[in-house]
Amino acid sequence: MMEVTDRAATGVRPAGATRIIVAVALIAMSIAVIGRVLFDSRLAELAAIGCYFAFAVTAQRYFGLRERLLLVFAVAITAGAAMGHGDPAGLMERGLDQATFLAAFMILLALLRDGAITSPSVLALGRYLTRQPPGRRYLAISMGGQIMGVVLNFGALSLLGPLIQRGARAGAEVAPEITAIRERRQLSALARGFSWIIAWSPTSIAQALVISLVAGAEHGRVIAMGVAIAVCVLTAGWLEDRITGARIRARLSAAGQLPDTEILPFPGAAFVRFSCVCLGLAGLSAAVMSLAGAGIIPALMVAAPVVTTAWIWLQIRSEPDARSQATARTREIVLGSIPASCPEAMTLSVAGYAAIVATGIIDARATADMLGLTAVAPLAIYVAIVVIIPVLSNAALPPMFSATFLASFLSAAPGLGTDPSLVALALIMGWALNLTASPFSATSLVLGRVTGIPGTTLSWRWNGVFTALAYGIAVAFLAVFSML
Image (tube, rainbow, N blue to C red; front, side):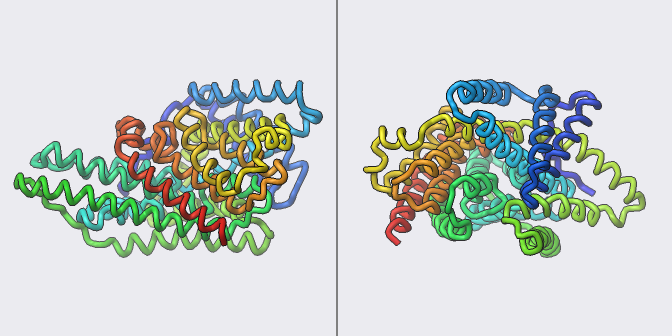
């Protein structure tokens, strides 16, 4: 079986004892979070918080400068709450409840990546997407990146990024200029398609966070509006790519340098198998929602490890040493993949915690009055939200913090006249724009790590025009939706 290396998941591997402790803490925390969400158990909530602290203390060797700075920031925010809030313990508990939920979401959904990295079907689909002729390639990569991202999350970038780069650079006879053009257009298509998955996919962390924070937001309505915007953004990106491509082809044709493209046959069997994984995830999630009365996000958290286990077993079941391979894969996931997700889990959770606590310190009513927000048209608030998140991201402030803070603040501020679903949509739109607008976004960081291309190139140089187009589309839709 050919193995796809997920470079984004590789990195520091501390001593075995540390890995075991961190893994046990994260697994126990995730189980406790599910228990708290499904059964509203106070005991499970406290257990999750205890496991989270164990994780934060023992996983220090996994953390880099970003995670350590966020922890310092969180400690400073906590000190401010202790001195300036009437119920600091209650506020911190709410923040920690949010932190454990976000960390568990990241850990459990990331497990799907472990089924993908050794899947021949995923590899076949990735190669097919990157070998399309120029006229279809943008849509194939952009839409394929979105579909794969539903199951693989950031693993889709880790998988397709190197495949695109390898394909673009293949062939000694290809001119360096053509290689650079292919690489730019295909990686841009991947970044754009993947980034806008959060507009409609319930498996995205943005949907999970925003819907849980904005009181009164209707998840189905937000997703429906997000689909409409994502389709228009996809079309605009495709048109921009076609215009750019036409100019490039005219120039290359005049110089007699138009390259040939090797088109692979559609991998029908691989598509069917991957579709079964997606349907299995959706079906099991629906069953959990129906039987336990859970929301979409908790149901996905329950379904992801079950689907991953079945996916891996189906890949190795016909091997002579299937049981020993299953044991080895389980050990690698528990002691390798789960602890390797520590930095992302810590970044998301600490940013969520800090935003909840910071919002609790601020008097939302007084601040809204001071800023004159009650006199501002709701549409202006929506538009401002869409701008603020990517701007702060360019200043290296995670969208997790800014989106959480804005969601909590606007939910607590009375008399604004805003529609909760449109507030949620604006937050998600701002988060989506951040992913192509900022060199510090998760998309730029992951793609930069697996391809070696600077984040400033991926975001500002290659996707600056696209981000401006997407912003205009998002604002136009918000204006229309606010009038309905």
